[in-house]
Image (cartoon, rainbow, N blue to C red; front, side, top):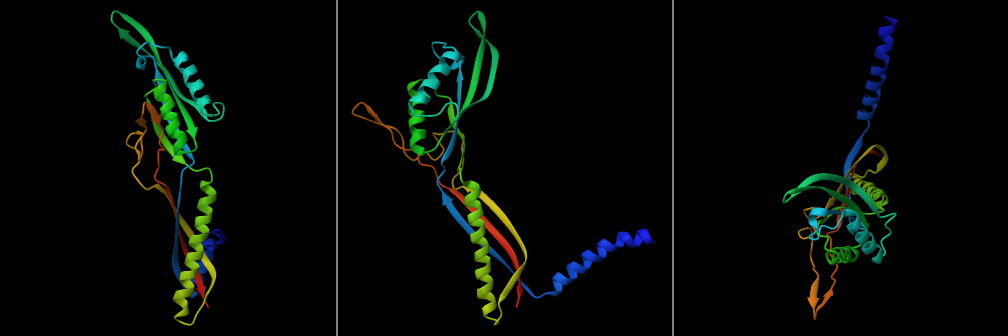
Length: 231
């Protein structure tokens, strides 16, 4: 019996807390806040393979050309370039077989203009297998927290407006919860030609005029659910 009473005690306390919560007059409101941010982290996957080279340049040779090209753009290859994958397979050319190596890198750039310059340099070096893998922002968590705070303030403002009609005021919060959503405004494709490519490289008088690749902004949305005591 003592054991049974001990087991029932937590449930009794929980029921009492729930009862006390329900018995208090309160108002439940939802607050919303959102913002648009321009991505400053753009990750590009670049794949080089001996089979992609007409003159059958080795992966090692293409790798050196790639590293040199990235450095000419001012990209820190020690910090902003990583190897994602490396593989090899047998390929038959005529009557002979050869091991063909493939290597995939991921490079990070910080703007649409730098992305345009990157793709221009890749084209100059006859590297065509490249695509935007993902985008982001270095201060994403900070931006989400600021947006979350705005959502809570919005909920408070709603509660003040609604209770003023009744001659009451919202008191301390009894309960708070939040929901987050981070989206890109337009569909995301792993292909730069189709992914938000609003301007392209144009040739004028025999020279290439590099235009910035413009990305749709990232939408950060926060929703706050708050229960305030009614005074």
